[in-house]
Image (cartoon, rainbow, N blue to C red):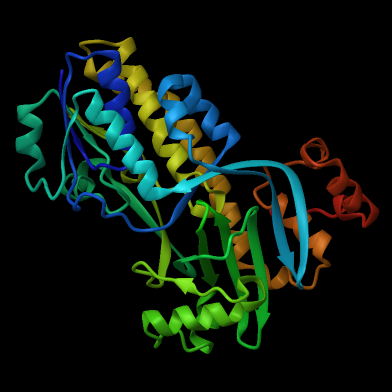
Length: 384
């Protein structure tokens, strides 16, 4: 089979790797519009559940993939300066650029061709030249735009503002920091992803953002302002920038997932908000499911697409619904700030409605006992 993959992100590269290893006769070429080594953002997070899918799909590659990950088995919710630990939450973190390097190296070893600095302007022409086009070109997918009338995408822009930073302050656990300021509430999502660096994502509602003057601030002014807000946690370390501009979350869905011999994958297909830390996991699970569909239905692309969609649509809807509830919680966090730190952490853990009190008891009996002592579990969380 002759396969063209547009986008050298985790979805496109992992699909290419699985397909080529299964059938070396496949001719696979990956097209990436950005230069080699150019990636934006800092680290990515996987849960143990997310990693288990990768281990099952390709045990050999899995060993290389996780070889240099930073790991922890708990998280911290910081409220009113109090650090509340919740154990039984296993996370594996790595630099995004290292993750893509490992994937690219594995693909090239299998004979997959990867072209950087290559933009595909005429997808229809490419689709006529190959058997399959995998459109894995991200949340702003150009392929999806070219065939928008067919895919019927919908977009939901959420209200909160975000800026991605890095820092040399090492946040070993995944840490959620909530800070009240004279202008309003600031939130930091932080986690160590290498021996030297942590991701530090700052979130703020639009009214607070404006009151703080960040709507008129430069990238560096915003960086310094946010560093001052979170100085107790950052200590003497500063925030680092990498195109750290303010943006809003844009939630993407598609009514149709395929068009002829073209299939959407990863963020081009659907975005999952990063408050759940599942975007990369979903992209790679998409890759696994598409590969499995092709293996089960060799020579019948439409049947393979149908199998892919049957497997992934329920999970996609479930994650997006959970992400929407998580977003609602963050966007209304000011209403929660009166809670004591343990009750606040409990409300956070229950925010998607998918984690029960019994789940928390199994994960961390000590945290659950503290919640029971405060009767947290007898209150009905707003999103449960």
